[in-house]
Length: 238
Image 1 (tube, rainbow, N blue to C red):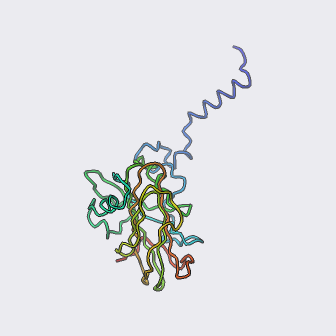
Image 2: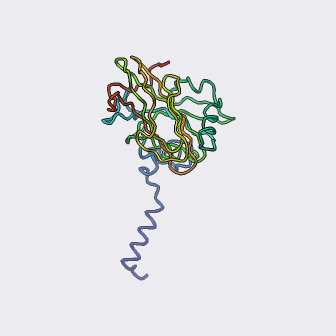
Image 3: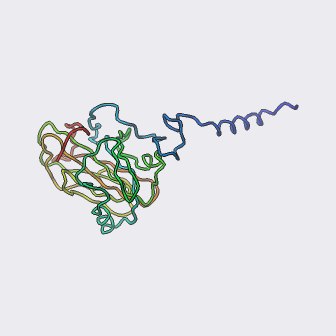
């Protein structure tokens, strides 16, 4: 048998490497991202501590995110109609736990607690890792901001790709619409008060196609990031 040339050997190595299922690329389970299990979510990890502080810029990096459900349309009227439709009981008041399930139109969807390594929560990574659709979908997300003292005159500042609607302690405070990119502080609420103790922040993000993500933080009356709180998903807010 003739010896293979240097370039032929390189080609064989490249082909072999392309067929190997590297566990690091597929997540801890080593299984395909097409399976309905946590796979390669490069910017998201399960929480490893009971609580979490915001980052240096005040961004909230721990959320409970529900697996996506079908939705179409990004205009304000369509999105408002979508978020007001009751998909599951108590959807605007529930504070779920990691692993809780809801049934939406005959399908069980699971809530997942996630920490993001970046300032934003990459919903494309989230859904793709679970083998879920990323286009023409609606995501629900919830977090609990636990404040040591009452904080007055703060504003919720958010960005999303694409449209999103936001609630604080059950009150709708901001919405942004249309096919848009996620921009820091793209939407800012009116001034509000975060009470001492747990405060529930909830959002619904609707994506048409392509990338999808969101980010959120609170700004004080001087437009500086609010950082003196912890995120405690085990707290009870109203």
